[in-house]
Length: 286
Ligand SMILES: *[C@@H]1O[C@H](CO)[C@@H](O)[C@H](O)[C@H]1NC(C)=O
Image (cartoon, rainbow, N blue to C red; front, side, top):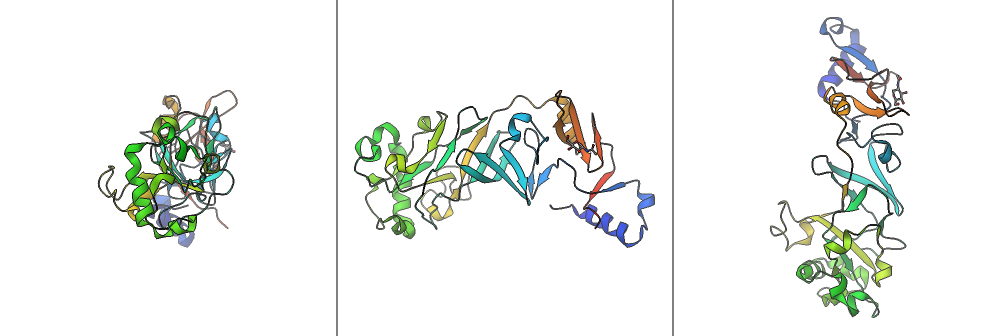
């Protein structure tokens, strides 16, 4: 967990001599709170929580913070979350079974899946099935049913500019009829599993950004500059106002069995509203 400089400084002065703290007006509390507003470098806010009892109850069974990494669990595995956008209600998870331009790999077993009834949906739309070499694959027999013809440029670029495509038994510049960028309406129907094998394919990839720019156009030519990961949307009711106030005072929201707010301020302090100003959390004393 990263502590801001001021905290490091204040905690250090506390250990070194209690010299200036009595006059600073800050109260220093040692230990990690039950619920934290960061996990590693990732800001964690409602509806997410860093451990059981934190954040929104519905989200508790899907996410956790472990050793400075935030994870999403779905029916197909546990995935590291590398970005959360609380405004857009979206997150990006890393899937180690997925191919990227620099590392093509055969997907064994399940790909990425979300069971029905989860508060998550795939955002798509750049999910690409690779090396669908089975002649019975729908990618070969009826591509128009699942593949987006307009996005075939993605396939062409992956097959042309990623030498590791040979790991999937293809040669560089292979015909792209064994590749399929899934249609976005196909992806939006949960429950959903991207199981390459089911479609007669050896692997898959998911691109959430092309090059440093945001748009589709900027660096669409070079798959080495793309960002790979699975973009998801989450659905949640409005953040309760009491929780917004707690978070604004640097607390983390948790809810008791009667759905009453617990505002977790530090390892030693919970309130039912907001956190008092001037609390500084320092790592546990040895
Ligand atoms: C604060 O609330 C959290 C979440 O319910 C709980 O795990 C923790 O033990 C509480 N801490 C204190 C000091 O009461």
